[in-house]
Image (cartoon, rainbow, N blue to C red; front, side, top):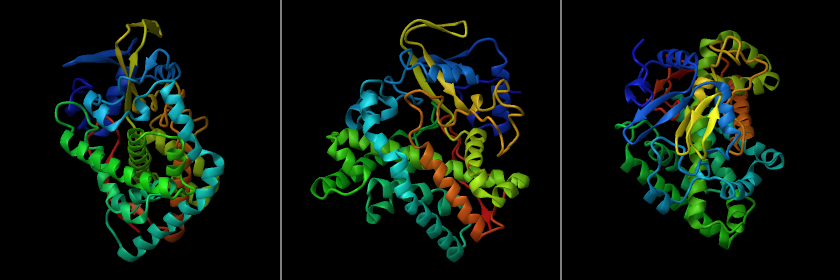
Length: 394
């Protein structure tokens, strides 16, 4: 096996199984491995227990210095505001308290009709247009339409938003030219422009949507823009990739597909959790050590960086029996695909589960033979397990 260097873009361009084998070898080592970068380095947390421990101790493993690789430049944070993922308490707790209003069971029950409507509309378009790419026809539009409905974004503003999400996430790769800074910042600026326009309208004409709630909480323009960008990227990009991976996994595991199709309501929750565990839509996030401490006997110094590799933790043999098997009935399934717990656990978990369950119930009902044709076309990235294209037929 080639040398493992998690800072090298060539590593992230290797076949998925090669990367999983490399993480398996790293998990066998006694302590987190340190990888040196041009401007520092990081301790790679590849075991499930280490990822969970760092996630649940935000007083020691902080997010305020930036959680992505590379970190956003100071001027970018000044201009565009701080994303919630890059905040620590008390600022994080304040914003999360406001935003969490959009993800209560009552609110999710209210938008269930929107989720059903979007899934049915997409199935109608598939039947009418007979598209070849599942990502652009189904996996991308599904979460985008749902999130826009939640936020109160008018239909007239949605057409270009998915393209802007792609632009805004173009920088989420590794160092050394897997990112396109200018392109990503232009996309981010356009997202903020849309948010500002909708916010102005809601101040004049309040409505029963999340934007009105955020405006009423006196969030500033940059806070609104930063949250909107996060929600679109986190709520659209990650769910889009999970949906795409799901179709391919069900295609290549026909026994699991038959089980799900036989009773979506019964197996839906296990299906979503296993897809998220197996595919790990978010590969990693970064934290900074706030004070000298130890992690499983390994010394960490204040100012050190640690990177939480969710993709590795989700295949940890110490936690998951037969971790490379795709099994909808896996119990328990303590994956960290939505985060390892703590204050940064994904707010949109219930929404993602609802979207994926409703969508595949609709697709199975309308197109019993729907399946992928060949493997997903990946976009090499150390940040997310992104699917650029997935051929499909029905």
